[in-house]
Image (cartoon, rainbow, N blue to C red; front, side):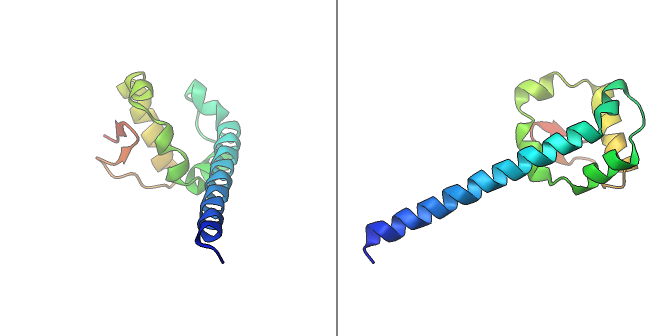
Length: 104
């Protein structure tokens, strides 16, 4: 096989994996957002919400937390969010970084 064809196949394969991973993350975020909509009103998470919180890979969430988004998150909201995640059974160690946020 010519080297250029092998290189093309490698790049194409890598691109397909990236697209598949992005689609997977988009789907995971959508399902989690739908299951956890009550959290916007500071209500207790449902069983389905907790299941989604435990299942969603952090690689699908943390890259979205840019410095601009982190700047809009108050300490109250951060503490509430970390509390919900822990309440749902997903451990979050103090000092854990996710995007531009650090868990208290």
